[in-house]
Length: 228
Figure 1 (tube, rainbow, N blue to C red):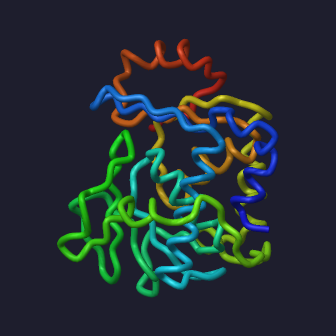
Figure 2 (cartoon, rainbow, N blue to C red):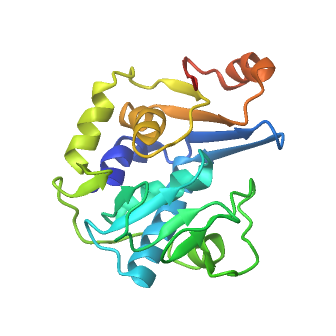
């Protein structure tokens, strides 16, 4: 069973439940995603990776993106089809980057638009990920992913899940996080671990320290994970 299936299995009884809330204090935006919405984006990503890029269990996929709700869909979609998420690799089948950034090989630019708008088409040698992936199916029916499959920077599915649980986040914790989703440590601590605990994430990008208490109150968070 893939890492995504293991993480989301406890959530499926309540698909309307908010699981990722993303603030960007620089843009003054807030987006809340339910289990159903995150699963939808993950399925589209998985289908796109498999059908357009022949990704199979163990295939390296590089992710160089900030903490963002679109990044969550990409990571969960990559794991759903068994991709091995890395920060960078010469043999990566493609690299996800923010708009305007570059990388060797096939590049997928992610709009990071708060409302999920695309980039208006592929350009400059970079694929418009959102524009392409949204055309793919809302459900994913892929091959089984063994627990021994590399999932995150060399760690297997089983190892990633064990490491996430070992962080010790209490069940159902709603975390306020300002930590970046670096591969592997940030992704493990700020995304995988809360999900493994059956919790939810309120991610604040470009945080204004003066507004964090208001975020805690409004979102009813129960723990912090703050950047150093």
